[in-house]
Picture 1 (cartoon, rainbow, N blue to C red):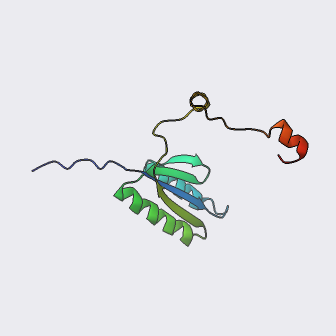
Picture 2 (picture 1 turned 60 degrees about the vertical axis):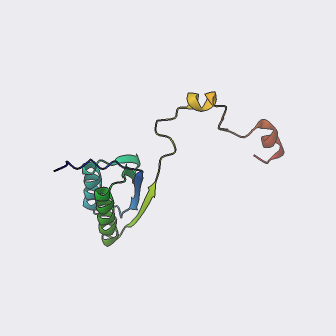
Picture 3 (picture 1 turned 30 degrees about the vertical axis):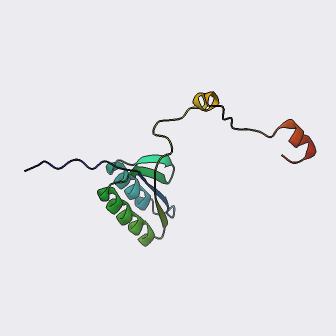
Length: 112
């Protein structure tokens, strides 16, 4: 009998949720369940985890619980644009620059 191959995630599941501040046990429950599933925090209530059938089931179950506790939950499926972390130096080497403040000519005209 052949051994089953491990499922390789093809993308990401991103869960965004909001819960009332009290009682805090609901938020703690969500955070613990996400951590057990291997999720990584992107922001306070925004988590990403590998897109596998088991994680989809976990995320849908979690979203259902969040809504039953009076909160809101959004679940997104996507692919990362970059497989590795992109640093500012790497972006500059590629010739793409991000403007952090308006140019002085636009600021003088009031358009910036």
